[in-house]
Image (cartoon, rainbow, N blue to C red; front, side):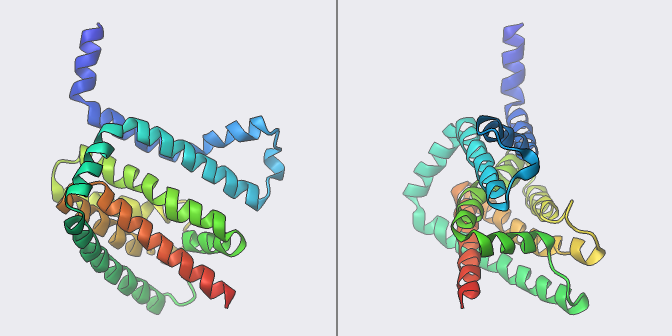
Length: 236
């Protein structure tokens, strides 16, 4: 019996780990119950700051789990990155620039045809940046990119063998994740397109370098730049 289970796991390991990683991401809010229970917090009286801290706790928890799940792959990718950093960085910036271009263009088109609308996800992020800039940097610029790249790039690349399908599906799902559950109008829903453009560029650079740290690094840089621009803009 153990042998059969072991053979089954080895045969479908990438799918089992991938599905588990995705499920952990979408149900990570349940991790919040740990600090709520430890510190005897009232779920009905949690402040905005405490809510953000709980979100960071969820991210840290996920970060540690993903490190354990993919430790071997991450170590191999880190060795590869050290061997050819210039190549990986060049490819990363090249495809990030392409993704950023299409992200900006699609945002401008949406604002042109749907004036006065914006992404609810972006509005929520801006609110956190305005009130808790340091915590926002930790959440959106450090932990968030790593976790999202594991979920929407690492798992998808492992499970989807056709490069074009991996790139498109990874990007589209990444885009939809940023609007589903928050968009209340067609205009708000269509803002998945700019996010998808960026997600496709991350998947593309991952495929080109076959190194997880390429999209992870560029995602980190992208979010950090936008967060710092927001902080500077709010302080002026």
